[in-house]
Structure formats: C-alpha cells, structure tokens
Amino acid sequence: MTTDATTKPTVRPSSLPVKPRIYSGIQPTGRPHLGNDLGAIRNYVALQDRYEAIYCIVDYHALTHVHDPEVLRRQTLEMAAALIALGLDPKRCTVFVQSDRPEVTELCWLFNTVTPVGWLQRTPTYKEKRANQPEDVNHGLLTYPVLQAADIALPKASLVPIGKDQAPHLELSREIVRAFNARYGETFPEPQAVYTEAPVVLGTDGQRKMSKSIGNTIEILAEPDVIRKQVMSMVTDTQRILRTDPGRPQVCNVCQLHRHFGKDYEEIWDGERAARTGCVDTKKLLVERIIAHYAPARAMYSELLADPAHLRAILNEGAERIRPIAEATMTEVRERMGLR
Ligand code: TRP
Image 1: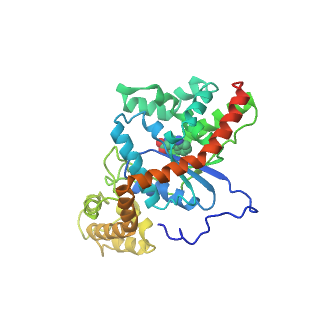
Image 2: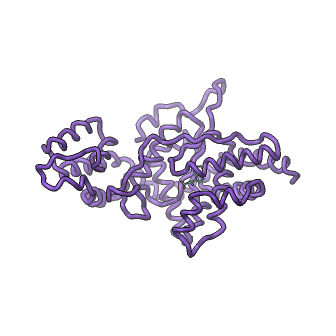
C-alpha cells in the first residue's frame, strides 16, 4: 500500500501551480474494515499526490452517536493509526482530528444562520438516524450536515472524495455555501464530489453493506486468525449446494472480493464456473491474499498504536498546518458578516 511513499518528492517547486485542494472526513469508528479501505481509504491514498489533500477524523460528528469519552478517544487514535498504516503519508497530505481545530464549530454556527431548517429536516440521513436512535434525537443529528459544510469550507476545499451514500450531504454543503455566498459575497468555492470507484462492498453475510454496526465485517488489521474466521464464515452463492454444482461468480461475494486482490480473478471465476474449485478453496485463497496484502499495514498499525505520544505529535502537526488557513478564513468570514 505504501509503495512509492519514499520515492516521490515531498516539496513542491514553487513555480508549479498549486494543486486543487481536496478535503474528506472520516468517522472515528476505530480499526477500519475491508469496506472502509476499498470504499474510501484506498482512494484517499491515491489522491494524496494529485491534490493538496486534507483528511480529517471527524470526532465532533461522532458525538452525535458516541457518548463514551474513552471509546471516542481510543477510536480516534485507532482510525488515525490505520489511515497512516494504510498509506496516508503525513508528509504528502494533512491528517488531523476535527476537534483539534475548533474554529470549525464557529463556522458551523455562522452557517446555521444561512441554513433553512427545512433543508435539514428533509435530509434522508437525518430521517434514517432519527429512526435508528429514536431515544437520542439530539440537535447534533439535525445540524450534522451544516458542520460537514463548515469542515469543507474552512480550508476552502473544492473537491470532496466521498462514497455515494454521502451525496445528499454534499448537495447540502453546496447549497449552504451558495446561500452564504449569495448573502455575503463570493467567499467559498462550491465543493464538488469525487465519487470513489469502488462499488459498495458487501459484508460477510453477502447481503448488506459491510458495516461495523451490523457486525458483518472483515477486519483487515486484526490478527490473521480473526481474518481467517471472518472470511471462512462468508456467505457465497447460496444456490450452489453441492461441491460439483457450477458456481456463479457474479453473485458470489467471495469471488467479487477477489477482484481487489489479484489480476487473476477471472481465472478464479472460471474455476468456480466449471466447478474445478469449491467455495472453500476460493475462500482460503482470499484469506491468504488479504492477510498477505495487509501484513505491512498491520505491522505499522501496531507500531503506531504502541507509541501514542508519537501518533499524537503527527496529528498535532496536521492541525497546526491547518491553523493559518482556518484563521484566514475566519477573519474573512467575521468581517463579511459584520462581526468585526
Ligand atoms: N459524514 C461523513 C461520513 O459519515 C463524514 C464527514 C464529515 C465528511 N465531514 C465531512 C465527509 C466532510 C466529507 C467531507 O462518512
């Protein structure tokens, strides 16, 4: 994953045009699973050289559903370690924790005043979350997309790599920025989504999107035995009963995942179709490939977590890099709004 990390120059000659700025936020869900990597993190890694990339672990957003301080702190550090272990290089991009730059909460408040309540109440994710946690419909859930708009606007990012599930949030971010610009003058670029190419990664149940809350994950940074157990438990082609029945790779989640772990997946699929191989063989191969692929990341992840002070220093440096950008934006915004 970290292939060319050391060969690329880290200092940009000042004569070259500044690369467009991208921003993305990721929830501090702790150790990421295969769906997080294929759906988002791989893409972040690929984009860090083409753009001036800023990646943020959004702990303020997480407070809308995580209420245990120790859990939040631990999961934030775990996500940070994982992002770096999976290939984000703090020399080539900026990785920081949202609450280390509290200016974003001020910008969120200011954005609240240009955002009609109706826009937020209509947001599909708000309706979903209200249904998922009816005992805790806190105001943060409603204003969540305003904070997300502030995240993106604070560094004036113009591109936002996200999964399709975030489309409604990004549409709102654009509308909020537009409303601000209309009232106070052109201040922020309207952010554009950069959709990740990876299709939705299904969980080990072969039915639903891989998700920690469902418990159908493959934990790529866990001990090999854990990965082995999770992959071997995967639901495959449910119509293939006998070992001699032909398999249907297009509906088999194990076969689909092989796409990401070797160029020879078509051959593996042929073996399944011809019943030369059984589901168990194909799973065993997948397990070994996943374990091998993530071995360097797994080692680096453990190392980073074993030295939290060092990890914290990396994150502090990321937040410090954003400081002058955030301060400049806030000075401009306060002036435009009549606060100075
Ligand atoms: N809402 C996003 C998610 O749940 C996380 C997020 C917060 C985000 N702020 C952002 C994503 C800004 C992109 C840009 O995945």
